[in-house]
Amino acid sequence: MDSIVVRGNGPLNGQIPIAGAKNACLTLMPATLLSDEPLTLTNAPRLSDIKTMTELLGSLGAEVTSLQDGKVLAMSSHGLNNDTAHYDIVRKMRASILVLGPMLARQGHAIVSLPGGCAIGARPVDLHLKAFEAMGAELELKDGYVHAKAPAGGLRGGTVDFDFASVGATENAVMAATLAKGTTVLNNAAREPEIVDLVECLRAMGAQIEGEGSPTITIQGVDRLGGATHRVVTDRIELGTYMLAPAICGGEVELLGGRINLLATFCEKLAAAGISVEETKDGLKVSRKNGSIHAVDVTTEPFPGFPTDLQAQMMALLCTAEGTSVLEEKIFENRFMHAPELMRMGASIDVQGGTATVTGVKKLKGAPVMATDLRASVSLILAGLAAEGETRVGRVYHLDRGYEQVVRKLSGVGAHIERVSGE
Ligand code: EPZ
Image (cartoon, rainbow, N blue to C red):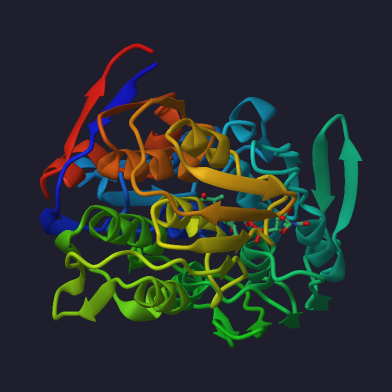
């Protein structure tokens, strides 16, 4: 297993290009199952999760051809010939559950392994299943698989009241409803930019949808969907992650492709911490002159609140802020596993359930640390950028799931970072 070695260094300067959004691509790819015409995605990120989704779609009989070094995905599910998504693929990536809605809508039946939990939580899919039942589907859980069957005439429009604004459940429900007979209304729907991006793609395929980005989404079912070419939206989590690099190290870095509207709450918190964020023609310019970092309190919420996927990275910044910050993780039940690793670097963090209290220290000290999940791994790299000495982050396969070319992007702005093979 590879490790990444970071040495603390001074201010960072230059530009970092931001890739297409992993979490948009992972719902856009299953959308190809809704139509027998080609769907092409451009600005796709080059990540191991995308490879896993490619493998899963291939196992169902869909074709995904990777072009232009993986930035273009030409897909077709003309040859759909299997309705079962097997555990050995699904267990690698929870987003696999997003093939259930499209398969149910397209062919009336689907068998998908339950994704199981992961490091950050139990990750149930009850809200996904509730949505399909509201559209008339019969669901049976057997041997760890969901067996889903649409009514004889296909899914019917229905009303879904989500107890929680679940991103995945909203995406699955929207995709299933595009081919249901009649109108579907989703109440308390998630509002993430990745959902807006999915709806824009589905609309280009001929879907009739309104309200994306608001808590109520209305879908008028159509008989069939066509093909389309769609550009994947910029990855706001990669964007926020790299905005924190100059925030932690000092200097000035322009994040190409970034826009404030993708991360308004996060940008407000950075400003409160003493970081300057300026929208330019090409992206977002982030700088911290020699001022100190101020402590800020953070609570993670569904969009447009502070993203849970940036909580670990923000904690890395606050470890050396002046004062005490309180971080509340309201989305997942176990998303502070980066805290003990940061404490190995000298951070002062008290975790009580879903609340972490961070008391700023002058400087962190480099140490060997362990990545536990995708966002925790990059939080440790950010901490290492400003720590004294060397930090070695193990198990970086977590990183490869969501960040392409980390070493190249950070060394391109002056970071001392390298990838070494073996533990
Ligand atoms: C998506 O996961 C993202 N993944 C996650 O990003 C992100 O953290 C999350 O949304 C929240 O923004 C992808 O888009 C592939 P949820 P998802 O359904 O859809 C509970 C990353 O690092 N819940 O909004 O699984 C659930 O347990 C990943 O890129 C139910 O109880 O998130 C969790 O506590 C991590 N029942 C909360 O809702 C359900 O049926 C948020 O889940 C579904 C969810």
